Amino acid sequence: MSICLLFWILLLAAECGSHSLEFLSTGRVQPGSGPHFEQVTEFDGVVISHCDSGTQQEHFKPVLESHNLPGTCRAACYDVFGALKEISKFINHTRNVQRRRGCITSDERLESAFDNWAVNGEGFIQFDAGAQKWKVLSPSAEMIKDSWNNREARNHFYGHFIRRYCPEMIHHIKLRETEKRTDLRVFANPVDRTKALLKCHVTSTDKSVRSVSLTEDGATKANWITVTGPLPSGDGSVILILTAEVPLIHTNIYGCVVQTEDRNITVMWGENFTFTYCCMIVIES
Image (cartoon, rainbow, N blue to C red; front, side, top):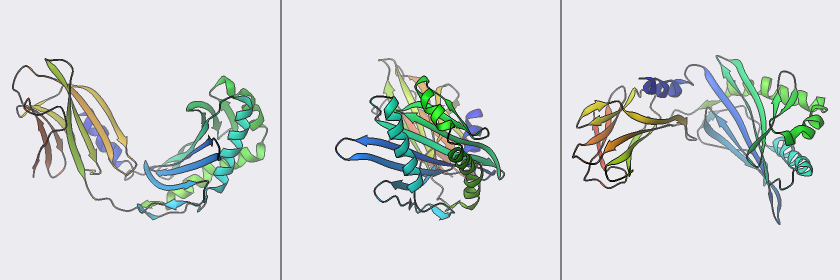
C-alpha cells in the first residue's frame, strides 16, 4: 500500500500546492574551443527551458502555457565561467563545475532555497541563504569559501534571487495539460537456471494510478524485493520500477498489474517468453 500511496502522492504534488523551480547549470572546459556553458530549467521535475553560451537566450519548451522567466541566461553564464576560472586556480584538473539553485514552495510559502556547487561531479560548496554565507562540502573549498564570503553584495543578490524572486516566478508558471498516459513493461533477467528477476517498469502521467501489483497465475502476490522510485521524468511523467524474484522451475505465469481509477493495465510474462519485455498487454475496463 505504501508503494501505491507514494506513487499517487508524487503525481498529485503539484495539485496540492507544492512546487519546485530549479536552475541546473554546467560549465566545462573544452580543449581547443574554450569554456562552454549549458543550463536546464526544471519546474516540478519537468524541463521547461534550455540555454547555452552560444546564444545565451532561453529556449522555452512547448510544455509551458505561461511563465515569468528571464529570457536570457547571461548572468548565470557569467557566474559559472567566473567560478570555473577561480576554482581552477586552486584545484588542478578542474574539468567542469555544476550549479543547482532554486526553491521549493508549498501553498505559496517558501519551504527551501538552495544554491549548491559541485566540481567534477563531487559536492564542493553550498550557500546558506539565511546567513548569506557559504559552507564547504569539500576540504578543497576552504579558500574559495573565504573569498566568496567576502563578496557581501553578490551574496545578498544570490539570497534575494532564491528566496524572493524564485518563489515569485513559480507563482506565474503554468504547464499545459498533459494527456493521461500509463505505460507498463515487464523485463526478466535470469539469475541462474532456477530463478529470474522480474522487473515491472511503470511510466505514468495519470494522477489516478492507485496500485502496482505482482501476480502469479492471476493471483496477487506481495513479494517485491526492490522498489526504485517514484522518480520524476523530464517530460512530466513519473517512473516506478519494482523487482521480484520468480522461479523458473515450473510453469507458473507471472505478470504486473497497474490499477488506475477507471481501468487495469496488465502485462504477463511466462516461461515461453524470452528474457526481454513481454509482448502481451491486457487492458481491462
